[in-house]
Length: 273
Image 1 (cartoon, rainbow, N blue to C red):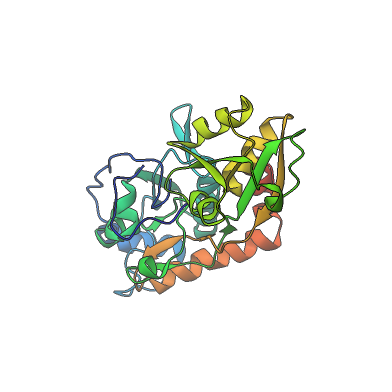
Image 2 (cartoon, one colour):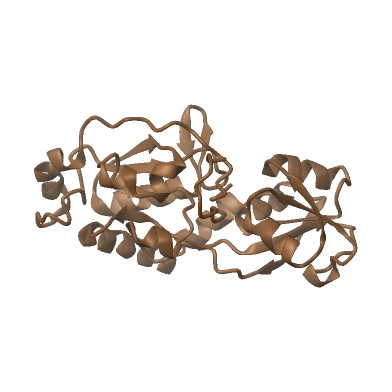
């Protein structure tokens, strides 16, 4: 998920987050259900870990739609992040409740600080500014920049984009990189318009995060994911600042799913990678 400008703008790809949805109030704070939650998870009650588990399950804040991480299907929020949340909840031995939240309340830490949720999983890129107001797990995905072209374009990498028309989504790291390179940049308000321009030969290639571009390439035999570039956009699970118990539990799940192949399967299922 892209990184936002220093002055927050209405949510709309990250910080550039291209999606926005009103926050849904959560009337019962996690702290009120602490005792029962601890009995389920075997945690020890501490002030810092007070919201580490709740009797009605793990409460997850997200901001849908932001495919392939979160999207609505048949009345439910699904996606890569929701599969990850299911794995965390399963290891805790509890169920999962999803809360829609405005992205600004997620990146500011407000949704966690006010106990709207126990964790925030919303394609959140780790930045120093965000790490000052919330704690992050180990990264679960490196959302590299990628280059997507028509299969017969003749473009074989970033180095071959001189003189080519390059589509990008506004306000994203893809736009920043393409502009820095001095390419002929064509901006689009959302990722779907960008893909349509590529498929109708309005541009020669598009540059964006591999999570979105990989999913599109997997869905179309006419498109090809040509090259990726590591730009340090690491995504992680966020918890309330100082909630070390829940953070340790999340990291334990991440270690497990990296080791048993679950994370690799999730990448294939949701991103075609």
